[in-house]
Image 1 (spheres, rainbow, N blue to C red):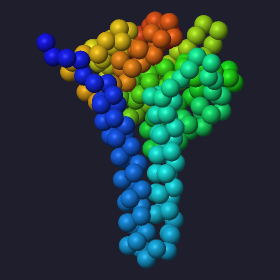
Image 2: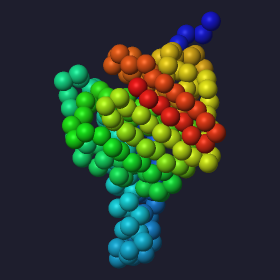
Image 3: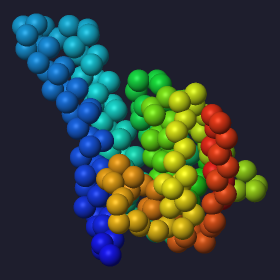
Image 4: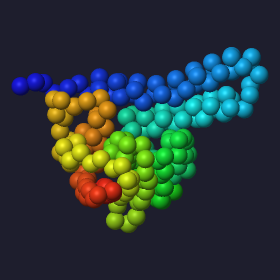
Amino acid sequence: MPANPDLTSLLGSRLCHDLIGPIGAIGNGVELLLLGGGNGRGDEVALISESVAALNARIRFFRVAFGIARQDQAMSRTDVTDILANLFPSGRITVTWSSPAELSRPEVKAIFLLLLCGEQAMLNTGRIAVLRDEVGWSITLTSPRLRFDARLWSLIETAAVPPDLEPAQVQFPLAGQELSRLGRQPDIEPEAEQVRISF
């Protein structure tokens, strides 16, 4: 029976994969500037600027999603929405966030991990709505290209780590582990073009 995969190594692969795109775009922008004689024309500068903003947002997002989150740590709604504003620069995924002004960092960490699960399921197209009300948290993912893999989403409920887990799937058991630390059990409701996760 194969041993469970090393989540730390999988996480390293996941981080490298997601960061390489914006970094490559920055390199392309620099090449365009050099080919254009370094005049700093609008298109090239815009490409670099957008790529830097996306890379900064992705790193800040990963810092919350994969970093330490102590029970006494808090985050402001403003900080969260600032990170999310530049996370999907293509505009193919939009995020709306409705919550109190001050938030528990461990809860935001769990939400961010679930957003990574949603991003994969929506194939980079769709809408994400995050709501914190008196009942708890809910995330609604809506996409015409929604691909719901029941096996992966079950890892959020069980926090199990299957031996054949791929780097691009590491967020599923990590989300389950974080919810378990919070003492929460997720409720996942898939539909044809929508998935709702609440806890």
